[in-house]
Length: 483
Image (cartoon, helix red, strand yellow):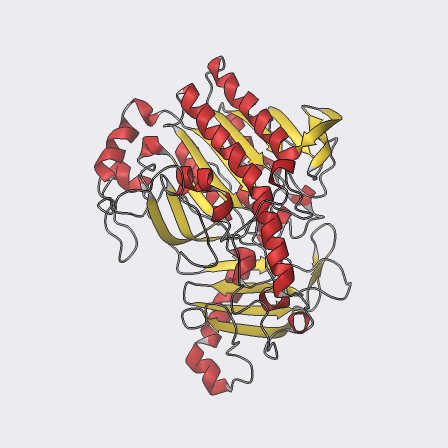
């Protein structure tokens, strides 16, 4: 157990050593023998899943999609019930990412299955640029699903406006205590801790399955662990495991980093404080997820409910002096990512090491529900055998104000990461302006330098860049940015 992930024993035991952990491939299950990416075997649970998918449980699944706010990896300590259910008894994606480490662009990618440069929500002010006719909630509702939203929706969305294609909703004006809500069209204040309100509203929605036999889609989005990271009173002051930082917290020599990182002032003490506050708020999320599991078991719907859990972006705990998100470093775009669907054989405990992202959620839900939308998707179904060798991660600077990261895009693979910064900014409508000139570059060998301490392009000669493969990486990144 690492110092970064001090996690207590989960209440649900993990699979035994004799139970192999295999890659997900429901299409392979349905065919009986699909091949998966190089190095992986045909899943050992294929026969069981094939029978499940072709028997009575093959009916369209219910869908529970949980998206937390600013939750980085290495927060499992706070969530033993969540990980015990969705990771130890479901699928844990060990290389889970978001394609833009910022709230509205990331959530719009969840809804649409597209990169931010495709859906147009390039910053938190541009939420209305999302094509609501192409969202997963629209297609699920049109296909006969009962749809509900409980919690945060999109930044800059007016609270009085109903979120499209949700039959029921409790839309939160972000906050932790005694917040403003839009409850099915009525704006009102609800006293109490907002994660508890989200939990109770979701449980009420689930309970309606006793009378309403339609399949349902619940989009559940508590405000945790976003700042100001106010814990529920019962968790205020809860001791958390000690954390001694990591080599990037704070990185002492940043001469090879871009100017905004050179100027960053975050400390280990600040990182420890942020981490502790996040863990305390996530305890309440864990209570909610545990309650959802109990309710599904009570309703007899635990087997045929597809559950996906992801953070909308990560967060830096003082890495490279940074104590926010929005940067190309791993802590900002790597997130916890879990899936469970026992009726399809995905409830036995598996680790999936593919590079996966928030853009893969919509295609996954479409495949599970048997929907074939006409709109283009940048992601692919997690239920398929498809695999990528790298991922585009991108971020846009909003406005001309000094400070903070410039617009950037990054080629992210398991073993390397190449990033370019640009002279580009976006307005509140997401429209891009600027010369597009590359202003700074970074390359990291993630195998030898997982904490991204040494930018191999700092002072590199043209010959050294050739040996690192930079020209080809730059060409691929340029292609990805316009795909």
